[in-house]
Image 1 (spheres, one colour):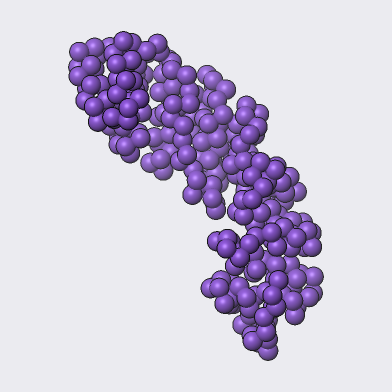
Image 2 (tube, rainbow, N blue to C red):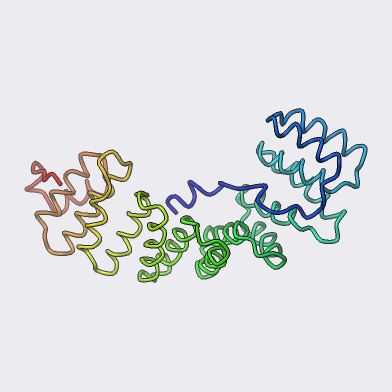
Length: 277
């Protein structure tokens, strides 16, 4: 899933509004957090929780700090404490979903995030719910989740991009093209999205349009050799075999394995020719 998995845990842990009012103890902890002293903040939280074990805002704050440190199981203990003390979990339900997502328990993530989205229209919750469905290859549910997230916040290139991937994997290439195009409007220089949209255009047999997009990927970009290879595939589909081989040879020289296979099968007599684009 290309960049959807490379980018995924860009989580705004404090993006939801607190489900409980902040106590004076939580406000004292915030003073340490404002200076970046998380160790002192955790120490104070431990002390305050021992003193006021009924304070759900303290458990919630400690869970967030543990999540930032990658201590997911201890964070889940605190989140369960919030839910046991509150009739409604609120934000803790969302954070539980994020913990399970990070632990690659996508069914668990879906259970918690589904509950949270029943209570609150929250773009990040819908986004991670959709990503969880993506991992389980539940593509229609993923598309629905990404669309819900976009309906709440339309300024999400990753939501459009991943919805495009889900559509592509569902063989709905026209919808994938539209979604990738929207993602590119928001991040016009993103080569991952350019490659993805070019692939959708290729499936729609719009080979010239696909190549136009691929040529926007610069030599310094990590996707340059992929772009070269795909330009060759488009030319091959247009029965321009000489041009296809020119680009495949260049991609092969940059270490693209599929280009190496393509040149061996289709370009035996042309391995020494290189066309600069």
